[in-house]
Length: 285
Figure 1 (cartoon, rainbow, N blue to C red):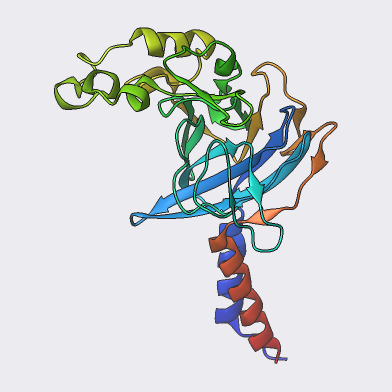
Figure 2 (cartoon, rainbow, N blue to C red):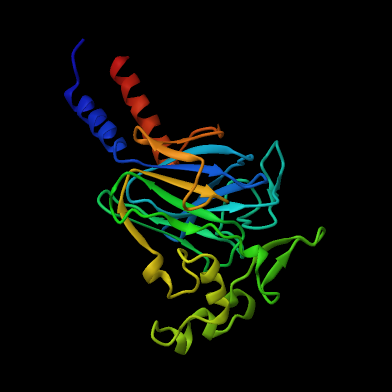
């Protein structure tokens, strides 16, 4: 058999690029099922995925270098088992289990901007709160500290910001002051579009008191954004920053007492693998 050097070179390039993937391990430590949402924005269009995590379940997700997006948890969802259509009480992002829009407010968000040499990540409460989220890097170089909000703002939310389930009356979220009052002062816009002028309010201070490692309003990201260079990140819902059920072992997160969900690759990686398979079949036959 004659070796096609160009084809082999392309395969090696593809395999080498796969080594630069960033890996997320998502785990549900809440007392209820949640439906994580993962979304990135490219050319003004949102590309999202979603799935269900039962109590104690973990899920592996991989993205390429250069990925920028957000991860959050949806609660109180009801999706049709056949076609995946439905809605959620909080964090809703369209009418299907796979997101087609950003999460509806209020929602607490894990934000990432990833590259080969340096990643940026934080947990944002600028759009309100619906679930505690913790981000923990595995290994890596740089600051690489644990980010997130491990307090539950639903228990101390101001009556002005409370969101309740219409049928049960249970508090399911806490709105941001910007969302609730839609004013320049709370949204840091107009004449307040300046970090010197737009300062913390009593509402954002109450968020910060419960979640000191998360951004509480638009100009609070100066202390909440963390820089690190890592290949693995844990996103734990309803976990403590000092105690998760997952530990970093052998270049991956291992979650004790957690059942592993299905493993997923991003659409770009799925396409890459498909192209690689086609190339191999053409080479062999």
